[in-house]
Length: 120
Image 1 (spheres, rainbow, N blue to C red):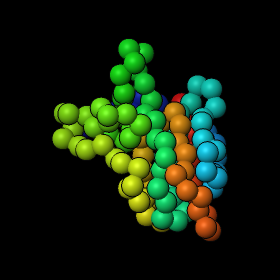
Image 2: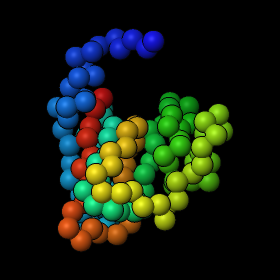
Image 3: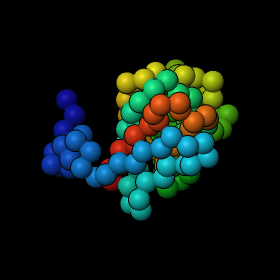
């Protein structure tokens, strides 16, 4: 079983206490503050993403490449996953978790958008 070294930080991230950002605009990339990444994205309506960039390791490799559709090597071979295309519709109410450095919408929502949550 995995052990969380600092459960206080994990709890703060789970409740969004590191901050968040809302977007409903095409071309308005959400990027986290310095020293943080986007750890969750909640969809307030059915939407497609234009950019979803996974956090990079210091050697330049994607840490969570299975949710990075900005390049051809998007899916991790070990995970047997597939790259997520820009045609993928993320349904209203869905929250995805990972570690991303940027996200933007392919089209503006008609009623709502996305909320991105930050953590270290």
